Image 1 (spheres, rainbow over the protein chains, first blue to last red):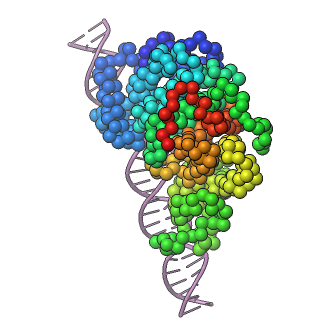
Image 2: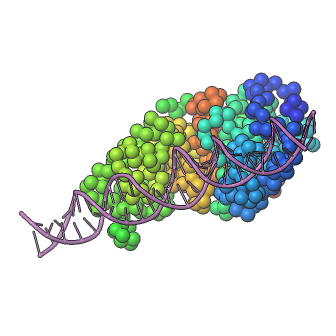
Image 3: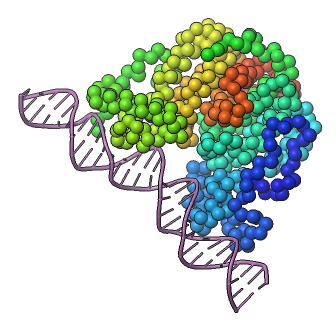
Length: 236
Length: 236
DNA sequence: CGACTGACCGGACCGTCGGTCCGCTTCTGT
DNA sequence: ACAGAAGCGGACCGACGGTCCGGTCAGTCG
C-alpha cells in the first residue's frame, strides 16, 4: 500500500474538500518493507513478476493464489505473508501503473494536470481513465472482484473518485458532487468496458468520447436549462 | 433425459412485450413448465419462497445454493434441476418484478411509457430504474455476480440496455447509442447504488436525480455545443 | 385396480477458491 | 560461530457452485 513514504502524500490541492479523510491508514503492509530480508525481497519480485505473467497468459480469471504461487515457484503462504490477501496482491500490481496516472492529473501538464479549467480537466481525466483501464483491463478486472463488504471500497477507486468529486465541486458547488462522481466513475467500471469492447459495438476511442460526453453534459455552464420539466414528478 | 423435446418451444409466456426482440435467449427453463409434475411445481414454489426469505434475512451474501436448499427443505440437486444454476434461480426471482417494470415502460402511461417525447421517457426510465434497483437491491446484487464470461450479459440487463439504446437513437440518431447506453446503465449498477447508499452520502432520490441529470445532460437538444473544442469525434 | 416406469428427489461427492497454520529452513546481528 | 528471529512451504480448512446416481413415488395404462 503506502509504497513511498506515507507522509509525502501529494495533497491534491488547497481545494477545500474536508469530506474525505485523505490518509487512509490501511495498517502496515503485513511486513515492514524497509527491514525486509533480502530473500524476502527477492521473493516479492518473483511473485509480482509471476502474477503479471499469469495475468498475461490466462487473464483475470486465471489469477488465483494457487496459480500465482505455482508460477512463482513459492508456497502459497509466502504470498499471503507478503501481500496479506488477494486484494493486497492486485493492489501491489496496480500501484505501479496508478502512480503514473496519479502523477498525470496531480502534477502533470494541462489539461489533465492543474492549470486548465476544471471542466476541461474533468473531460481529460475521463478520457485518460478510460484509456488507462483498457490498457490494464485484465488487471483492473482481477482487482475489481471486491466483496461488497468493505464500506469504503477499493483503494485506487477512492483516489479517482475523490478527484472527480473535487473537480465537480470546483465546476459548480451546487451540484451533488458525491453522487454524481459515483455515477460517473461507475459508468466506466472495468467490467463494463470489457463488455462494451467484447460486444464489438464500441472502440476504445468511442468509449472515451462517450465518457467525456457524459461528464461534459453533466457540467454544462448553463446547466439549469437541463431540466425541461419539474423534478417532483415521480414519487413513490 | 427428459426435458420434453428440445424442439417443442414452450410458449414463452402470455407476457405482452413483443416490442423487444421476441426471442430472449432465456433458453428453456430446464424443464418444460407446462408438463410439470405437481410435486415438482410445489417444490419450485417452495424454493422460490425460501430464496426470498433467505434474501430478506441474510442479504445477497447469504444466498448460496446450500442455504436455499436447506431453507426450502429440499436437496441441492432439486434446485439445480429446476433452475439450471445459480443464475437461473436469481433470474426466476427477478422475473416477477422486472415484468412489472417492463410493462411500465413498454405499455404504461407516459412519461415512462409510450407517448411522451423520448427524452422525457429516458429521464423517467432512469429514475424508475434507480428506484427499482434500490427497492430490490439485495436481489439485484445476488443476480449481479456474473462471471464475465458470457458475451451477452445478463438477461434482464439486456432488456434495459436495449430500451435505453432505443430511446437514445430516437432522440438523436447521430450519437453512438450502444456505447452511451452502456455507460448510462453501468452508472447505476446495483453495486454502485449500494455503495452510494451505504457511504451515507446519497439518498435514493438524490441518486435518481443524478441519474436523470446524467441522461439529460447527454441528450441536450443543442448538444453540439457541449464540446468547447474538438470536432471529429462522432464516427457515425 | 394393480403394476409399471421414468420424472423426480436428496444429499454425498467433486474440484476450486481464498485463507490459515505450524514445523522446518535460512538469514543476519553480534 | 551461533542463536534466535524472520521467512518459508504446502497440508489443511470451510465454503462455494455444480454433478451424480440410487431410491422413490406420481401419473398412467392395461
